[in-house]
Image 1 (tube, rainbow, N blue to C red):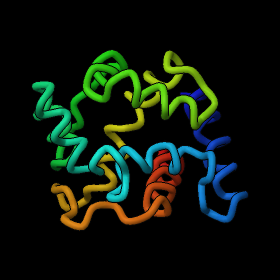
Image 2: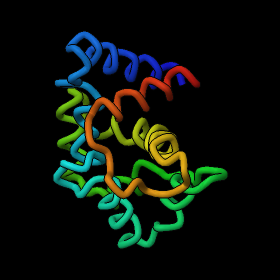
Image 3: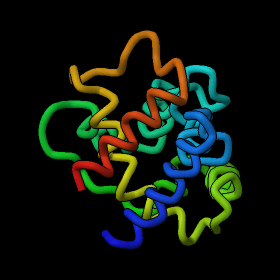
Image 4: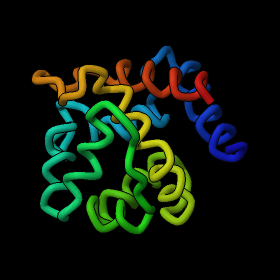
Length: 142
């Protein structure tokens, strides 16, 4: 996971240098996907997208306790759509081909960490700081 650690470390480092605001960092890029104020409907909206794509069991494994089911970059592209993937990649300054495998590795772990009670929080994620904290925790566990 050296490349993933390196890229995520640089993104998180950039976020920390900006006073935790994650202006161009990973938390900011994922905030629209997972945050309650995001255009994608937050974590609940993401669950709905997976369910509509017939992959509710996959994201359910990330939320629930136990092993996280794997997901491929292609599956994420199908669930989220190429426009969303391109927008996230653009915010991070990388291309979709580089983003998808990283997202496929990181997203199950991130969602697992954001749902420690085994369910989607009713209030959703309120700030990018919650995402940044969870992302930092993921890197420390690596």
